Length: 79
Image 1: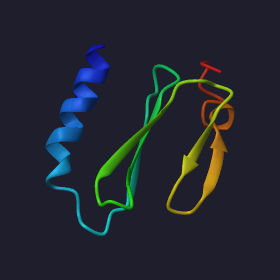
Image 2 (image 1 turned 120 degrees about the vertical axis):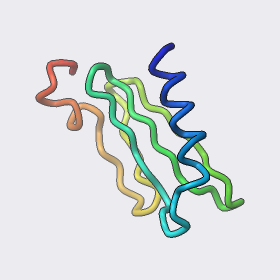
Image 3 (image 1 turned 90 degrees about the vertical axis):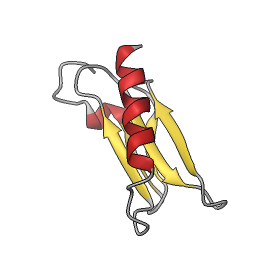
């Protein structure tokens, strides 16, 4: 809950300062299986997609590539 609050607060602070050329950014937690991907929706608003299941794949929207969380966390001791 604390990490979520900090992440949420960081997102709100950064939202106004994100360069207009940036279309997507990804936060990968190093202490738990948790990936947050923020991307610009077609409406122009930022959307959040969260991944917490080790069997799921992170979808990088801007280049339409999926990366399995198993690969991201392979040597972390979390997978």
